[in-house]
Image 1 (cartoon, rainbow, N blue to C red):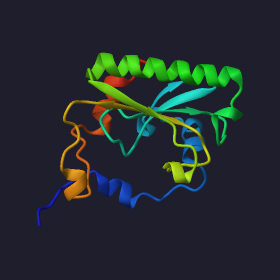
Image 2 (cartoon, rainbow, N blue to C red):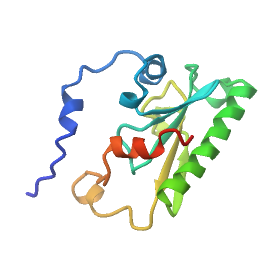
Image 3 (cartoon, rainbow, N blue to C red):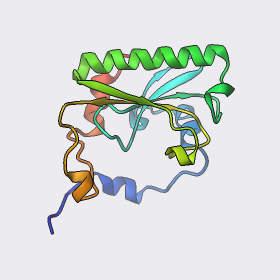
Image 4 (cartoon, rainbow, N blue to C red):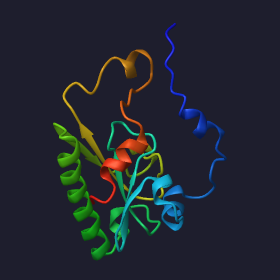
Length: 157
């Protein structure tokens, strides 16, 4: 059996797991760098996914704890989509991906990991970024640490 080493994961394993909604809690904290929070708008914020599919995996999140898009005000919804568009533009400039997956998983059966706080994923994609690792080893290889990605995106949204 081959071993995959990811020593930075030990920090997460040892962390006390938060209670409540992590998406509600992060913008209330003051250390945006430690939380990978990239942008604070009026009704929405942008945070990097701590368990990304690819480098630059962002989430656009309303501050209000709501289950679906239909619960957002027109202003919140407009800002949300505007930030998604801006996120794509910045990721294109910084990382030059070949494409993007942009999605919202509404409900557990739709794949929502955090099912009661709506958020939009922006995942940059490159030709050949999928390989045998998820199938054979049940693991994804992300070639850049989150801190480096954060520093490249900080202040650009």
